[in-house]
Amino acid sequence: MPLLAWIVLFTAFGGIASAAFAGLFLLVPEHVGHRLLPHFISFATGALLGAALLALLPEAMERVGPDGAHGIGVALLVGLGIFFVIEKLVLWWHTHSQDHNGDHDHQHGHSHGRDKASGVLVLIGDSIHNALDGVLIAAAFLTSFPLGLVTTFAVAAHEIPHRVGDFAILVHSGLSRGRALFLNMATGLASVVGGIAAYFGLQKAFGALPYALALAAAGFLYIAVAGLIPGLHRRADPRTSLAQVVLMGLGVGTIAWAESLTHQ
Image 1 (cartoon, rainbow, N blue to C red):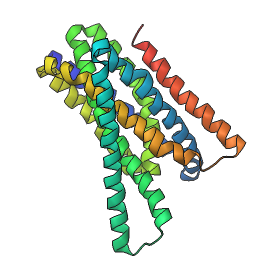
Image 2 (cartoon, rainbow, N blue to C red; image 1 turned 30 degrees about the vertical axis):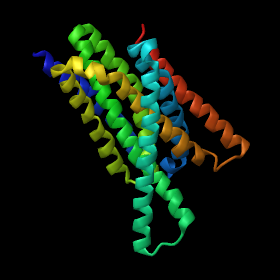
Image 3 (cartoon, one colour; image 1 turned 30 degrees about the horizontal axis):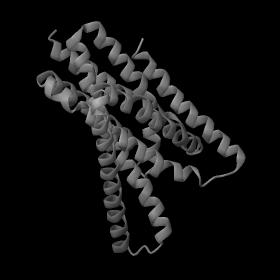
Protein backbone atom coordinates (compact mmCIF):
# COMPACT_ATOMS: atom_id res chain seq x y z
CA MET A 1 0.00 0.00 0.00
CA PRO A 2 1.56 3.35 -1.04
CA LEU A 3 2.71 5.67 1.74
CA LEU A 4 0.37 8.44 0.56
CA ALA A 5 -2.59 6.06 0.98
CA TRP A 6 -1.52 5.30 4.57
CA ILE A 7 -1.23 9.03 5.25
CA VAL A 8 -4.74 9.69 3.87
CA LEU A 9 -6.15 6.78 5.89
CA PHE A 10 -4.64 7.80 9.22
CA THR A 11 -5.20 11.53 8.84
CA ALA A 12 -8.86 10.72 8.16
CA PHE A 13 -8.91 8.59 11.29
CA GLY A 14 -7.34 11.33 13.38
CA GLY A 15 -9.65 14.05 12.06
CA ILE A 16 -12.99 12.51 11.09
CA ALA A 17 -13.25 9.49 13.41
CA SER A 18 -12.66 11.63 16.48
CA ALA A 19 -15.53 13.89 15.39
CA ALA A 20 -17.75 10.86 14.83
CA PHE A 21 -17.07 9.83 18.42
CA ALA A 22 -18.53 13.15 19.55
CA GLY A 23 -21.70 12.14 17.73
CA LEU A 24 -22.46 9.75 20.58
CA PHE A 25 -23.88 12.88 22.21
CA LEU A 26 -26.80 12.47 19.81
CA LEU A 27 -27.80 9.29 21.63
CA VAL A 28 -28.40 11.24 24.83
CA PRO A 29 -32.06 12.27 25.36
CA GLU A 30 -32.55 15.95 24.58
CA HIS A 31 -33.61 16.99 28.09
CA VAL A 32 -30.55 15.24 29.54
CA GLY A 33 -28.33 16.82 26.91
CA HIS A 34 -29.68 20.26 27.81
CA ARG A 35 -28.59 19.76 31.42
CA LEU A 36 -25.20 18.37 30.38
CA LEU A 37 -24.47 21.14 27.87
CA PRO A 38 -23.12 23.72 30.39
CA HIS A 39 -20.76 21.08 31.76
CA PHE A 40 -19.45 20.35 28.27
CA ILE A 41 -18.89 24.08 27.76
CA SER A 42 -16.79 24.21 30.95
CA PHE A 43 -14.81 21.17 29.80
CA ALA A 44 -14.37 22.68 26.34
CA THR A 45 -13.01 25.90 27.83
CA GLY A 46 -10.32 23.99 29.70
CA ALA A 47 -9.54 21.85 26.66
CA LEU A 48 -9.14 24.90 24.42
CA LEU A 49 -6.88 26.66 26.92
CA GLY A 50 -4.84 23.50 27.40
CA ALA A 51 -4.48 22.91 23.66
CA ALA A 52 -3.33 26.48 23.06
CA LEU A 53 -0.92 26.84 25.99
CA LEU A 54 0.29 23.29 26.53
CA ALA A 55 0.39 21.94 22.97
CA LEU A 56 0.22 24.47 20.13
CA LEU A 57 2.36 27.31 21.46
CA PRO A 58 5.10 25.09 23.00
CA GLU A 59 5.30 23.17 19.71
CA ALA A 60 5.59 26.41 17.75
CA MET A 61 8.29 27.74 20.09
CA GLU A 62 10.23 24.48 19.96
CA ARG A 63 10.25 24.50 16.18
CA VAL A 64 11.55 28.05 15.78
CA GLY A 65 13.95 28.05 18.75
CA PRO A 66 14.86 31.07 20.90
CA ASP A 67 15.72 33.24 17.89
CA GLY A 68 12.23 32.86 16.44
CA ALA A 69 10.25 33.58 19.61
CA HIS A 70 9.52 37.16 18.54
CA GLY A 71 7.99 35.93 15.29
CA ILE A 72 5.73 33.53 17.17
CA GLY A 73 4.60 36.40 19.41
CA VAL A 74 3.77 38.49 16.35
CA ALA A 75 1.85 35.59 14.80
CA LEU A 76 -0.09 35.11 18.05
CA LEU A 77 -0.95 38.82 18.19
CA VAL A 78 -1.99 38.85 14.53
CA GLY A 79 -4.10 35.75 15.14
CA LEU A 80 -5.94 37.37 18.05
CA GLY A 81 -6.62 40.41 15.87
CA ILE A 82 -7.89 38.23 13.02
CA PHE A 83 -10.29 36.34 15.26
CA PHE A 84 -11.47 39.60 16.85
CA VAL A 85 -12.31 40.95 13.39
CA ILE A 86 -14.02 37.68 12.40
CA GLU A 87 -16.20 37.82 15.51
CA LYS A 88 -17.04 41.48 14.82
CA LEU A 89 -18.12 40.58 11.28
CA VAL A 90 -20.27 37.68 12.50
CA LEU A 91 -21.87 39.89 15.17
CA TRP A 92 -22.49 42.63 12.61
CA TRP A 93 -24.06 40.13 10.22
CA HIS A 94 -26.30 38.76 12.96
CA THR A 95 -27.38 42.22 14.15
CA HIS A 96 -28.00 43.33 10.56
CA SER A 97 -30.19 40.26 9.98
CA GLN A 98 -32.14 40.99 13.17
CA ASP A 99 -32.79 44.56 12.07
CA HIS A 100 -34.40 43.25 8.90
CA ASN A 101 -36.49 40.82 10.93
CA GLY A 102 -37.74 43.58 13.23
CA ASP A 103 -36.10 42.21 16.39
CA HIS A 104 -35.17 45.08 18.66
CA ASP A 105 -34.12 43.07 21.70
CA HIS A 106 -30.52 44.25 21.48
CA GLN A 107 -29.21 42.61 24.62
CA HIS A 108 -30.61 39.19 23.73
CA GLY A 109 -29.42 39.60 20.16
CA HIS A 110 -25.89 40.44 21.23
CA SER A 111 -25.71 37.42 23.53
CA HIS A 112 -27.06 35.08 20.87
CA GLY A 113 -24.78 36.65 18.29
CA ARG A 114 -21.75 36.01 20.49
CA ASP A 115 -22.78 32.36 20.86
CA LYS A 116 -23.13 32.12 17.08
CA ALA A 117 -19.73 33.75 16.60
CA SER A 118 -18.14 31.22 18.96
CA GLY A 119 -19.52 28.44 16.78
CA VAL A 120 -18.06 29.97 13.62
CA LEU A 121 -14.72 30.58 15.30
CA VAL A 122 -14.45 27.04 16.62
CA LEU A 123 -15.02 25.67 13.11
CA ILE A 124 -12.28 27.92 11.73
CA GLY A 125 -9.91 27.10 14.57
CA ASP A 126 -10.63 23.38 14.25
CA SER A 127 -10.01 23.41 10.51
CA ILE A 128 -6.61 25.08 11.00
CA HIS A 129 -5.76 22.75 13.86
CA ASN A 130 -6.83 19.65 11.91
CA ALA A 131 -4.82 20.68 8.86
CA LEU A 132 -1.76 21.05 11.06
CA ASP A 133 -2.48 17.68 12.68
CA GLY A 134 -2.49 16.22 9.18
CA VAL A 135 0.90 17.80 8.49
CA LEU A 136 2.33 16.33 11.71
CA ILE A 137 0.92 12.86 10.95
CA ALA A 138 2.30 12.95 7.41
CA ALA A 139 5.70 14.11 8.65
CA ALA A 140 5.80 11.25 11.15
CA PHE A 141 4.93 8.66 8.50
CA LEU A 142 7.60 10.09 6.20
CA THR A 143 10.05 9.57 9.07
CA SER A 144 8.95 6.02 9.96
CA PHE A 145 5.77 3.96 9.90
CA PRO A 146 5.77 3.19 13.67
CA LEU A 147 6.25 6.88 14.45
CA GLY A 148 3.29 7.63 12.20
CA LEU A 149 1.10 5.20 14.13
CA VAL A 150 2.14 6.66 17.49
CA THR A 151 1.54 10.20 16.25
CA THR A 152 -1.90 9.28 14.90
CA PHE A 153 -2.85 7.80 18.28
CA ALA A 154 -1.66 10.91 20.11
CA VAL A 155 -3.55 13.20 17.73
CA ALA A 156 -6.76 11.17 18.14
CA ALA A 157 -6.30 11.11 21.93
CA HIS A 158 -6.26 14.89 22.20
CA GLU A 159 -8.77 15.48 19.37
CA ILE A 160 -11.59 13.44 20.94
CA PRO A 161 -12.03 15.66 24.01
CA HIS A 162 -11.79 18.71 21.72
CA ARG A 163 -14.54 17.37 19.50
CA VAL A 164 -16.86 16.52 22.38
CA GLY A 165 -16.47 20.06 23.70
CA ASP A 166 -16.69 21.59 20.23
CA PHE A 167 -19.89 19.67 19.53
CA ALA A 168 -21.35 21.25 22.67
CA ILE A 169 -20.20 24.70 21.52
CA LEU A 170 -21.80 24.27 18.10
CA VAL A 171 -25.11 23.18 19.62
CA HIS A 172 -24.82 26.08 22.08
CA SER A 173 -24.38 28.43 19.10
CA GLY A 174 -27.82 27.46 17.79
CA LEU A 175 -27.15 24.58 15.39
CA SER A 176 -29.20 21.41 15.43
CA ARG A 177 -27.37 18.37 16.78
CA GLY A 178 -27.36 16.72 13.34
CA ARG A 179 -25.89 19.77 11.62
CA ALA A 180 -23.35 20.25 14.42
CA LEU A 181 -22.22 16.64 13.96
CA PHE A 182 -21.93 17.07 10.19
CA LEU A 183 -19.89 20.29 10.45
CA ASN A 184 -17.73 18.84 13.22
CA MET A 185 -16.90 15.85 10.99
CA ALA A 186 -16.43 18.07 7.93
CA THR A 187 -13.63 20.00 9.63
CA GLY A 188 -11.84 16.65 9.98
CA LEU A 189 -11.33 16.65 6.20
CA ALA A 190 -8.77 19.40 6.78
CA SER A 191 -6.51 16.72 8.33
CA VAL A 192 -6.50 14.84 5.03
CA VAL A 193 -5.81 18.05 3.10
CA GLY A 194 -2.95 18.93 5.46
CA GLY A 195 -1.48 15.43 5.16
CA ILE A 196 -1.54 15.46 1.37
CA ALA A 197 -0.07 18.97 1.24
CA ALA A 198 2.73 17.90 3.60
CA TYR A 199 3.46 14.82 1.50
CA PHE A 200 3.98 16.87 -1.67
CA GLY A 201 5.55 19.97 -0.12
CA LEU A 202 7.01 19.01 3.23
CA GLN A 203 9.78 21.57 3.43
CA LYS A 204 7.48 24.45 2.57
CA ALA A 205 4.87 23.22 5.04
CA PHE A 206 7.43 22.93 7.82
CA GLY A 207 8.64 26.46 7.20
CA ALA A 208 5.17 27.90 7.77
CA LEU A 209 4.10 25.40 10.42
CA PRO A 210 5.26 27.20 13.61
CA TYR A 211 3.45 30.40 12.67
CA ALA A 212 0.31 28.53 11.64
CA LEU A 213 0.41 26.79 15.02
CA ALA A 214 0.55 30.19 16.70
CA LEU A 215 -2.46 31.35 14.67
CA ALA A 216 -4.42 28.25 15.70
CA ALA A 217 -3.44 28.83 19.34
CA ALA A 218 -4.66 32.42 19.07
CA GLY A 219 -8.01 31.17 17.80
CA PHE A 220 -8.48 28.73 20.67
CA LEU A 221 -7.41 31.33 23.24
CA TYR A 222 -9.83 33.87 21.82
CA ILE A 223 -12.73 31.40 21.76
CA ALA A 224 -12.09 30.36 25.37
CA VAL A 225 -11.43 33.80 26.86
CA ALA A 226 -13.75 36.02 24.81
CA GLY A 227 -16.47 33.55 23.82
CA LEU A 228 -16.93 30.95 26.55
CA ILE A 229 -15.67 32.28 29.89
CA PRO A 230 -18.08 35.27 29.93
CA GLY A 231 -20.95 32.79 29.58
CA LEU A 232 -19.66 30.74 32.50
CA HIS A 233 -19.79 33.86 34.68
CA ARG A 234 -23.56 34.16 34.15
CA ARG A 235 -23.97 31.62 36.96
CA ALA A 236 -21.98 32.55 40.05
CA ASP A 237 -23.43 30.33 42.78
CA PRO A 238 -20.75 28.36 44.68
CA ARG A 239 -21.86 24.89 43.55
CA THR A 240 -21.95 25.79 39.86
CA SER A 241 -18.69 27.72 40.10
CA LEU A 242 -16.94 24.77 41.73
CA ALA A 243 -18.23 22.43 39.03
CA GLN A 244 -16.97 24.84 36.35
CA VAL A 245 -13.50 25.01 37.89
CA VAL A 246 -13.30 21.23 38.24
CA LEU A 247 -14.45 20.61 34.66
CA MET A 248 -12.13 23.27 33.26
CA GLY A 249 -9.28 21.64 35.17
CA LEU A 250 -10.33 18.26 33.79
CA GLY A 251 -10.26 19.69 30.28
CA VAL A 252 -6.76 21.10 30.78
CA GLY A 253 -5.60 17.87 32.44
CA THR A 254 -6.94 15.71 29.61
CA ILE A 255 -5.02 17.73 27.05
CA ALA A 256 -1.89 17.66 29.22
CA TRP A 257 -2.15 13.87 29.49
CA ALA A 258 -2.68 13.48 25.73
CA GLU A 259 0.22 15.83 25.01
CA SER A 260 2.50 13.82 27.31
CA LEU A 261 1.90 10.77 25.09
CA THR A 262 3.72 12.48 22.22
CA HIS A 263 6.90 12.80 24.33
CA GLN A 264 7.11 9.22 25.56
